[in-house]
Length: 498
Image (cartoon, rainbow, N blue to C red; front, top):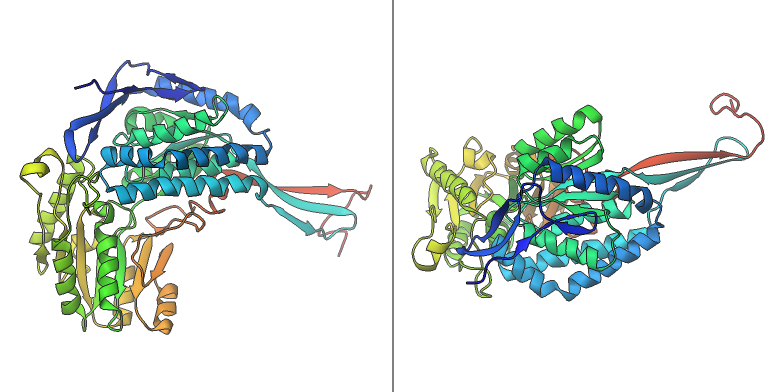
């Protein structure tokens, strides 16, 4: 077999080896004998080099007219479109999700890059009348400087694009640490930027562990913003690291999302949506539908149909177009999911309706595959109701009424996404109001965000910022209010105009 390709860090416009001289392997989670490549096992010295390059590049990049920055991003989006199929296959190999989903992941990066390219001619501020004569008022955005980004493995090109493109559009420079499980997809994104003329030092990539790369990145005083997507536990550490210097801190963390199915819902549609919401990406989404709250009148009917559909899912290597669900990302994550399956079996009152273990034998022995798993009769005090599992497990929870369903939906530490299936428009609008999440769907599952809408959640899901859409620009910029007085006199607002 050919030796795996060795990939380097990207610092100051050059592909360079790490100071350690060591590498780590990128493994296919569907076939652990498939080594996709070797990536640099970097340390704080590499992070320092990248930040230094980004800080120096910022001096010129911030002065490049925004429309010109947008033109580069437009070309990057076109390059990603041209190479979409290869990037999708690379992503399926390193992340495991099926080709239909990785094509969507790459498409999301394309959409995001096109969208932010347009902001080069749209990054609007305000002009407003002054309360004084012969005085002009306006507001403009200004960049922060070097932005550090720590990205997850489940959307290994889409999420980096959510962070990088608005930051670059605002005139910032970037140092990104990809997830150790999926560095190739970020490499492909960075390579597209290099090929389409991104100036040296404006984008930098350093691969390695969170402790060796992520920690020095978020603690460095030259970094003006840290954007992190991952667990709530690590998000707290990022927040603490940013606090002493009051740097911008953007956190996108966990979710325990619910679908409410009312007694007047289209049951077949709700089953379709719940299957996709629960088991798409093997449940490894922060927006996964891991709680399904069912009106008691339709509980049995829904459960019967839903379990039958889950049992019929084709699980395997996502490069096979017929496969519907891939593996867990790695052995550690698989074991976490298996542990929650064990916990669910031991919860007093919960009923295992299907799945509940690892898939073994034949092709499954090469990867980290878990069964699509459903627990029934789950209650709000159970751990599988409250805790994020991030795997192929979902719960069915009976509800007595609409009000009871809403109370169950909100009884959770997280507040990312929720949905309701109903044919009653009044009830749909009431649920939009009553469920406290950052994203809400009607007659659709909890997954399916689009790039021109703000993405993010409430409570322990995040810290109030949003990704995508124009709201992302607020993470990577500061507002500046500008007053121009052409009166040739000293004018004192709130004093001279009483």
